[in-house]
Structure formats: structure tokens, C-alpha cells
Length: 557
Image (cartoon, helix red, strand yellow):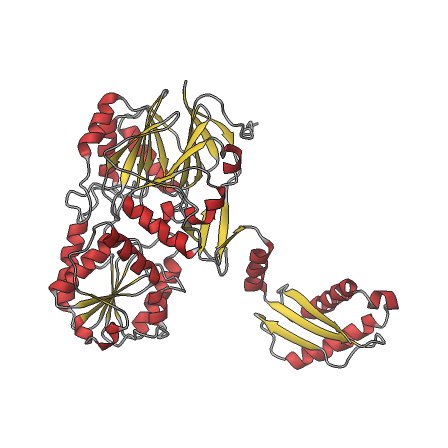
């Protein structure tokens, strides 16, 4: 018999690691470290919702555990500005009582979302200078510049009395980055020479052989592609990928094209980049209103929607519902991103819609229009070669990625590898590492600007409606308790053709049951609601295998 993992008790001594999101999944990154009951959090990100959450776009990690440690949480450190690492922060400002540390560009991105929610002044931001360390009660933090698909990424050295940890965050080795600092290989080597207790590392591309390519190569390829096409070009990428937007704008300028950026999220990213000294050397940007008057052959549009999101600019453009942009036969759409697992179906649906309109499509399967911001297997092996940790903890990836990462660590002679799950607390030291406790984790849904538990009733109802359909019955009761002759039935999502027959049968069956009720029962809306459901379901047994939701309106005159 397997002994259950004990319920979490807040440790008073020792060094601990706990993930609230980001292990076994892509997105919603949220990691906690404790040293002698003082805590820090690294990242607080969101993820995309799938078909299990109808009508929902975003999920955030469940962080109820913060209530237990709120007086001992010293800092939140945001490793970079991507939404899967920083996007959830704005939704949890009421639960945060500590400073939030981030670089200038990342801070600008977070403030944009805070401003949307009316919470701009509710967070105590501290600016990270990558050349300076941060000293907290039980932690000393240092930063190593890395390269990624966004400016100002870095890895974090966490020094404690029990040893040093390295939280790599998202990284790759790009020897020719277009924006920001170069990858600081020497600092990782120095850390290995000093002695590293544990590496907590990005696993996203651990199962891909070789080395990742450089963003510089994408810029060169885009320049060549743009020269081959004579009509309008639309390039879609992630809203926070300012490096890719810079590459697209450069390629456009080389080919005598203006660039219109469509979508608030992308425009905010560009504003944040300019605030922090990036892409100020590009002068070919125009407004989306001006784009209407630019000849097709002289225009490039950058917009979000690479994941097939139904509320995105590209989706509206594809359905000819955008007020400023209409596609024409021969135009080109470039999907300059990777498909996030789970989004393949919606992306393919969008591509098929474009193809039916005789729009040409290029994606990363066709040409080098995207490179990942995450290191491949050989880069991860290099990281282990430099740092030589005693313990490896793979994070940021689905199970297949975590397993591939662990095998790379083992092949690199790392003595101990621990594959965890969200909610499992690992005691890293002193003594040998072991899982010591568990807490409840999960996701919350973002509906509008509010958060709800993922198992809330209205989501269950939406799910049921989408699979089983819904029937609405309206019944009028006269003041003498007789039934009014007008009974209305509405059907949604059910394969029933003859509504008149349904209404007639319902009236007859319901009337027979209703006449048997006492006056007290006829006065009860609850009893009548149950009776309506009973009659409807009896009728449907012979017509449909579905068990739809039955709602009723009972009106009394």
C-alpha cells in the first residue's frame, strides 16, 4: 500500500521548492522557494483555456496557499514579460503584500494590464538592475543575462545558507540577439565552479535534438520572403514578441513597405519597448486607419491571433469583420509562431478559412519564419556542463518535456533528478531531497476581469449545454390556478424538427399531471419546475438520446 503524501505543514527550517503552476503544462508558471520559513515567488503567469472551458480564454493558477504565508512572503520576482510568466499578477494584487521585482521593460508590460484593471497603484514595484544583487532575510538573489524571445530575460541565482540554487527561467543560447544583452555564458561557468546545489530548469524543448536557431536568421528569411510577394502581407505572432515585431518591421522597411500594428496588446508592447529604449530606430510604422490608404504591395500588417483565438484581430480579419482591414485573393498570411499544444484544431480551422479565400499561408513548417525562445537538447546539456548541479528539477513543460529534460540531466552526470507535479513540496536540504508534503492546486478561470474557481456551476452548465443542448419552457398560471393556453417551448442544440408536435404533446402531458396536484402544490414554483422537467424528459426518451438541460419560466397572473 502506497502511503499518501501528508497535507502541507509550513516548514520552520530547511530549504524547499513548491510549484503552484508550470510543471506538467505549458504556461501558468508560478514557483515558490522557502528558506527557514521565509518565502519568495518567481513568476505569476497565465495559460490558455481549452475546450473544457467554453467561452473562456485565460486560466490562472490557484494561489490560495499564499494566504498561509502572506506574512513571510518577501518578494515576487518576475523573470521576464511573457504572459505565461507575468500575466496573472494583475488579477492577484489583493493577495500580494510584498514588493514585485522586475526589469524596466517587464514592469512596463505589467503596468499596462494593471491600468486596464484600474489597479495601477496597487503594486509596489522594485526595479531590477541585472548588475546588482538583492538581499532579503534568508535569500541573496543575483541575475545572469540570457537570451529569449523577449527583451531582458535572465536566470536567477538564489543563495541560501543551505546552498545555491539556479532558476533558469526561459532561455536559449542566441549568439546574435537582435534586442537586448548577449547570453552570459561565463557567469554560468563561474557558478558551476563555486558549487551549485540545484538547477530548476526550463524543459520546453528538451525533446528536440541539436541547437535552436537565432532570431537574426528569421529576420533575414522574412526579408527574402517579403521580396517575393507583391500583395498585402499579414504577419501574426505572440503579442509580447517584440523581437519578432522588430524583425518584421525591418524586413518591411527593406522592401519599401509600411507597417501597421493592429491589436491593443501589440500596440502596448511596442509602447513599452519604446519606453525602455528598444526599436526606436524604425520609422515605417503607421496607424491601422492609415493602412486603408496604402497600396497592397506596400503594406505589412502585424497582428495577434497566431493561436486561432476567436477574439483576436486575425480572426476578425479572416471573417471580414474588421473595420479597417479586408483580405483579398493573393494576399499572404505568415504564422510567425509555434502552435501551443491544445490549440492545433483552432489554428487549423483558421488556416482552412484563409485558404478557402485564396489567401496564401506560410508557417514555420514551410520556411524559417519562427524560432523558439527555448533552448534545444544540446543547449540544455551545455547548461549542465557549465553549472554541474547536485540536483536537477525540470519545470516548464508537459510530462514528455520533463522526462526528456531529466534524461539530459542524467546523461550529464547530475546525481539526483526529481520530476515533480504542481502542489508537491520538495525539501531540497539539508539532507537528501525528498517530497515532504502536498497542497491543493489547480486553475481559476478569467471571465471578464474577474476570477472564478474552475469547477464553478456556470462553467459546468456551459459544458452541459454544449454537449446536450437546452430546452426552455414558459408556462403561465392564472390567478384561479388554471393553466393559460399559451405554453411556449424553445429548443437549442437538439435535433428535433417538429416543434409544434413537441408543444402539443407537452401541453397534453403536463396538463394531465398538473390537474392531479393539490392547490398547495400548484402554488409551489419548485414543484412545478420539477414537474416540467419530468414531463419534458419523458417525452424526449423516444426522440433523442440526449439529456438536455431543462429550464422553465413560471409566470403567475
